[in-house]
Length: 276
Image: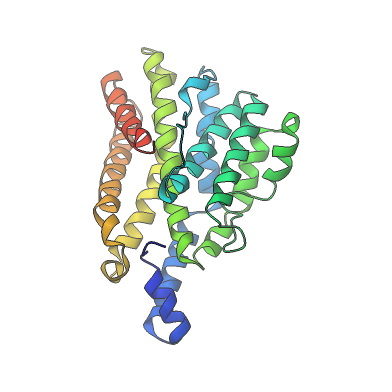
């Protein structure tokens, strides 16, 4: 298992529960609980329905297309978030079978990572989704969103294990990347339509949540002691461009030019291709 910023914290909890490390893990868990609220999750996921309401269409070729081979653990965690967005995108347009397939792929990734039984995965795959996989004809967009929002408090439970921190940040990163790709490409296709050109504004809740999570962990006085050296620059790079994109969209009030949308979508596409 690769080192993680929380491993040292958890080791200290076992060996000396009354040390400062106990306060550290409480700090991280508290940040996750503060940031990942039910309302924020609802706002994040509503972007798929806004895409439909703006006049978009379901296009299978805009979703992530996996390549042969088994992705590494980090890529699998990111793909959990990618498929989370793809399932919502399909469900928003009534593509129930496709939504069920993407939900199943999420669950398969969680199984491959051996997370079940180790951490409570209800935040990233609510138990209510199981019946949707079994009964795709009954899938409803609002039910999927409600399942995630209702399990928002479970994000804190994920911090009980070092693997949980990776799942939270990587999956949310995947959701943001896929959302920027799909909404951005729709906006490019519909150049000149104001409603479509403001679609990227709907990604702001995801980008801001991710920036807050990365920022909370990195800005902690203990971050440098716990962080995986191999991922230090990667985490910093992610935080940097996510903050830039979020601020860029927010300051423009979503009124982006087609060139700006193309730049954002293109950069997100590069992040998605890196998973292959």
